[in-house]
Length: 394
Image (cartoon, rainbow, N blue to C red; front, side, top):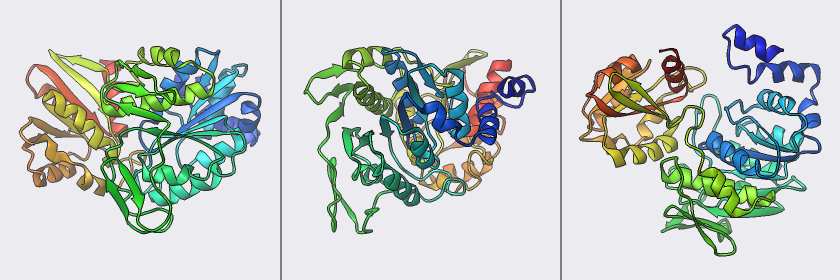
């Protein structure tokens, strides 16, 4: 009832309010609703929503799945998702990394997927090493859980190292700026190609069980399967391999899991295109330096004009210092428009990156300012949300 009322009053999608009320009335609601289900939790800084949708699609081969892949990733959202499908034998839940310890204790997952850990909204989430330690503490205590962990991420490896059962996945992670030193002893991390090791303690890249490789996955039995995804980018290939590894632990055959992932083309508005007066604007969401770095790699392949949209509301994080860690230099020579509520802050960063640009604060007008044809639109959280809402209204 609360969720429907929230929708009717235009206060939101209702993905959290129902759960918030339920938790006030019954603080053990999450534990109770998760009991008896095969629960998979998906967490990390980037890729949670996409990986959750992928995993839910794959696990759907086994039966009904309760999931929250729309992004309501805190306990209120989990309670809402589970209460909507109370008889589903499976649950696949996206979990904000800050809430993962509490959710894991309550839900007692069969599988936990650790995608990556990097800086994200420091004024809201906190320092990445604090997050790593909180995950490490709870994961080591999970009794009947298999952890699917990204062995190319130093922070994730440290968080998962003491788990009772770990499946290591090589994702080809390209962002290393948040792991220059060991999260366990503080000494430098040495990289040699794809391999890394701490120069002091025993923390090192584990031997992967699954490998992401040039549009394919290589499974533990050495079989090689072509992914053929509809979603762009190497990072989505990594998400797919992580989801497949998790799905197989729940009993889904590899081929069936991959077949189902191939049908994913749009994740809560991500990657869809909106048409405006002859311009096909593809909407891409990026929220932090690691995410922007990966997205700029995808955008670079097409060489289309780009609109970059930055807000700094509470949900985005009000501290914009992270802009200086994004490799905007990759956009040199492109036609670029700085947009959003903090377009001028972005413009300063683009100036130092020697990227020629114009400033059009309204994102829709920014799209209209470009020549007819394809346009790439990269926006952070509330900017992306607002763009999707405006596109739906027009």
